[in-house]
Length: 102
Image (cartoon, rainbow, N blue to C red):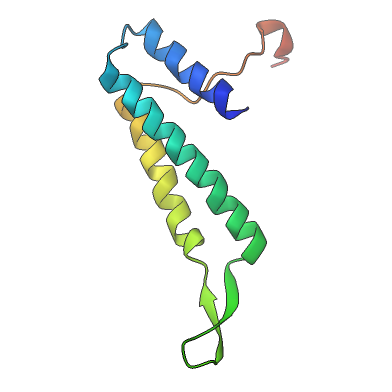
């Protein structure tokens, strides 16, 4: 799903619950900001790995843990909390019942 599809799905779920005030819309915006950040963290982990080599202030090459690995679960937890607080489910796909085989 694209960022736009996710946001539209969440907003539709809010409309169905008659939650249309700015407070709720702001939380969806926060969720989408976290979604973008999560994508960047995943990209960084794929690029650098769990640990990466760098040169410290003394000019010595050292291996450091990738902080994206630590931050990813925190971002995911915040995203899930927003969904829970808004009584929303994961974004709904646009597939119809005919598309579902189960």
